[in-house]
Image (cartoon, rainbow, N blue to C red):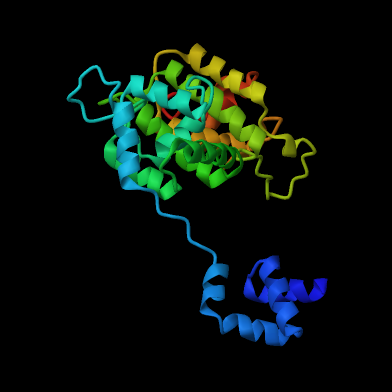
Length: 288
């Protein structure tokens, strides 16, 4: 009987209860299945229901709730105070959890701590949410994907530079860039989104697979601080994750065909005893 029930359920998608009812009545699996498909009500009941599309009115109501925290009641966007309440409702730490950058990417946030109505509604609809419980669940999935999916990490990472940059500025202040790196880079390393890309040049470096380590990020910060003066350009920002994924643990392998190879050689000749600083310097075109 159990095999017949399993076969009936596998073909029809019906519940075990319905399978037993049809099999007890018709005895043979093939006859029971034919009878099932001749019963429109049974077929309808067994057909998986599509989840309801997120409600625009519910999303508008939530947007208005967080927009109400505006100092200016005539403002059109959710601003920082509303964002802080949103973070509290979603159980997200705004200072420590980089999932907010993924949310900013999904909802097309124009700048840090701000959300416009169009991006809010379209973004949450794409994610499939219109209430706080479903949003909290989606935040967990975003966090996992951000840490484990290299392509998704890079999309969020590039968007983070754009929305964190002050209006009219082409670069990020070094301190601001470091604050974002401090949460994004460890998350990508731990989840695998920034896992090391093994060299394909045929060399067998036993340390190659270890690649970038979390303490190396502090070396990069120290390098930028010591260099002083300039902020972090978008080129430097984007190139940094490529460097993280491709440099080996000995800081010996790098893209010889890359844009910064000439600058790297000049630096190494200028300062041959400081190999790590030379490697890090290829990330900053203006420094080269």
